[in-house]
Image (cartoon, rainbow, N blue to C red):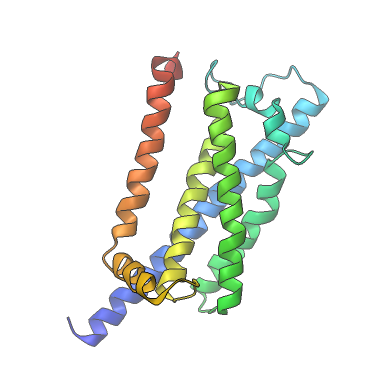
Length: 205
């Protein structure tokens, strides 16, 4: 493969990363907005029947009225309204040719890692303690996973992450071989399988 073809392939790959990040963040923002509106609705009327109360398992209302849904004293969805526009701005700027400094991308990686942990903490709580799943929360969980993997991919490619040289080389090789894509696909499939195994036919009752 000649140099021009390699550069073109790399450029397309980088563009695809930012596009996936942008679309995932937009999906998460929409979900956060809907959940925020529903949180306000429940604050006015705790017995309100929400549109995403599909059945006993898929029930936004059950999750939204749990203490886990307001971990910091306000609906968790409000965090998405703050965080996702930042990620959207980063993706749009990057697609426009902006190259962010290393400290900025490392900071973004750290902050979004916290967001990922929070999303999976709520997923775990919903699965094993609350006993119900919020469809919009699942959208956020899956979208947050995609953004995290894509942001990590960018930081590995640009050698932003403060990791040992040997580990950096291995990570770069894995990214160039697109092994991370197989990891994220397998990860999301495992999540879907866990949900099906946990609730089975009750998901469609």
